[in-house]
Image 1 (cartoon, rainbow, N blue to C red):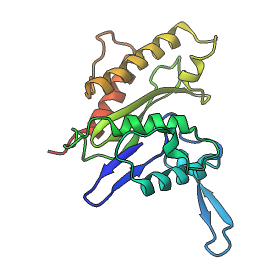
Image 2 (cartoon, rainbow, N blue to C red; image 1 turned 135 degrees about the horizontal axis):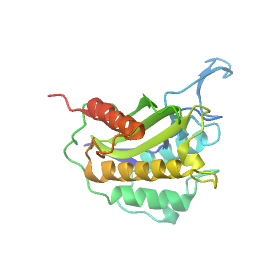
Image 3 (spheres, one colour; image 1 turned 180 degrees about the vertical axis):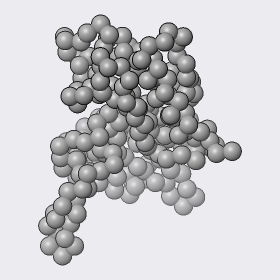
Image 4 (cartoon, rainbow, N blue to C red; image 1 turned 120 degrees about the vertical axis):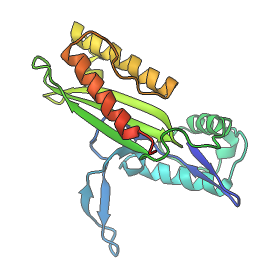
Amino acid sequence: MEILYFKDKNVYIFDGYNLKYKELEGYYVPVVNKETGEILDKVKPNYVTLSISEVYKNDIKKIHDFFNKNQFNEEIDIKDLDGLDVEIASKEYLVDLFNRAISSELKTAPGNYYNNSFISTVNVKSTDSEIPGKWQISYLLDYGFIYDVNIEFIDSNGNYLSDIAQSKNISNIEATMFNTIQKIESDIVQQQKIKINLTKEKTAINSDLNKLLANLSEELKEDE
């Protein structure tokens, strides 16, 4: 939930971004016949969001319209959503989400990265012949601040390291990679900085991660 404050009225934005997967079944931008409403084509999106989901898009539109109509400017409770008719979304979750948004610190100045895109992804091919694949880092900016970061290693078979980590088949090297990734993600969001040269130990994995972070830092660099 994001609230944009203007002189005459506020704008309430509700959506969900998937920083991990580039494609998911049922998420697409429809090409619709204007006269008949028939879906002529399904276009692959640049990023997976709830607003283009076959399952969630109707709820997302209802939530967007409801909050922009009611213009809430203070914390709400479940009774305030009596007029909202949603099929899947939890009203309890929406109340919590809105209250956290309305009570959060209002940003009056942009962060370090205000000249860059809202959401993007950087990739680096693995140079370790024993673990072929690629590294991926996706990020979400909120008013120039790094709101969220997701780092993934995707092997040559298309398996995601974070998915492997949920199973019992994770190897020691994969567990080390996963723990390293989690710390990097946390540090970036907390410190709002991209630190390169994570370790002096020269391995292909560390080299690839350093290159990934260097590329991210370059992409986020504020124009002088």
